[in-house]
Image (cartoon, rainbow, N blue to C red; front, side, top):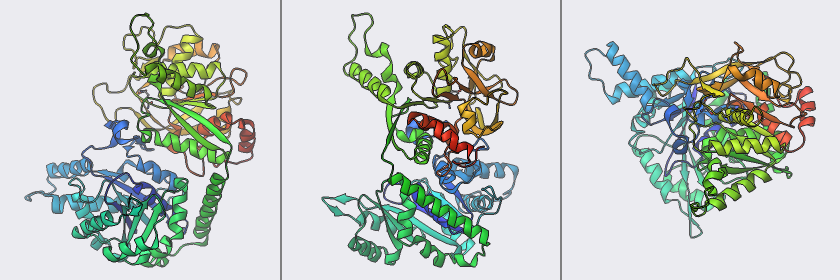
Length: 586
Ligand code: GLN
């Protein structure tokens, strides 16, 4: 097993995850099987209880693990399925060591960070790296290990020490390190000092960079490369510039141009891994499909505008998988995607316009209201993503109503699904209703709490992970089902506590809202859709299809939304029938 560690210096949030996933992708194009592990040095056991506004999206895995959003990057780039064990946190390793201590595994010893915790980290990495993660079920050849945060942080110290030891455990030819640094431009000059200081810190901790990946706005010039090479004590070929490019899909191209693969082939003696012709061909095919995709990205000029109406719009990473799913769908139909962000609270009339005629609305609120509605009305399609809590939900309901009445394509995901159900119940069924989550006092809720779930304990108590959704008999008319290749059942990932109240299903069906897919028992509603006579594309899914989207295989509900929004859904459905857009079933 070859290990490629990706660490960061200077500051975090400069694209370490993308560089790590792109490196993995390049190695995969050689025919190697690649897996990945993300280390998050925080105390939380997992990302499940963290606010999306603070840490970005919580990514959900097949096994129900709630993980850092970088695991999503890996799954999408490498086309793999990871487990909760692929995300290591400080909380998890401490919990593991403490449990072992209580069991008496270290009897008679003083349990310490070195060697007990650092050993546990190394054992964990080794064990997890060997788990087969792709459809072929083969043990991976290479494992990318991304260390979150920046080297030198107090939090990451035990992990850095564990990795220092790990290079000797696995052997030098099986361990390489990419350190991602930042080269800022001050008064027109590229500054290499922060990188020099970062590498000094790294070496001081016993780690040697094999590649220094320098994030910069403009391409790194030769003089900067030479300076970094000289002061950081590495060869010129070990300094790579990763400047801002058109899209993150171009990063693998950038790394390949700078001979990253050649470097690793030599450094990690990759030629010693014997690969079958089939695997080499698989790798080549992946690369040619990737090139085709980036080309088509560069040549898509026709725009499609999707409004994302949500409550965490201040930090766009909160919806990163949704954004990626839209991007993948737009790439597939060769359209240039424009996302407009709408904070759903801004759509709420009550707040913006005084109804009593006496109180004046807060300054700027009216403008926000009209601007937000301007965006919604101008969009080609509307998407209401997942979310928790009541803030902004009346705004989402208003957006869902607008989309339905004006025949604008709509996709509601999880909360967005529930929102459209509430809206339909109010406007079409004439009910005075809400979700129990949003209004605990509501007498006749259409969205109710799922009974078997623990109300008091937070973290891991939701309906989480992959569950089957079964398309009901007689739903061949459904565009969503056709997008899935008329599959009978699909497997998508879930993360929710509430669901449609089964008592009202008949009434909904009678009034045109069709719950076309349900869970195995038939009791839980998984998707709804309005018929073609009523709407060109009005779909909601209780599950989160964005978690399974892949760069080369776009998620089907998103493909439907983007295609309907750009007027080519019929053509796409035709193409799906002829096998385009990747496997039908997820
Ligand atoms: N808050 C809703 C629920 O728990 C929706 C969850 C979500 O959108 N992920 O059911």
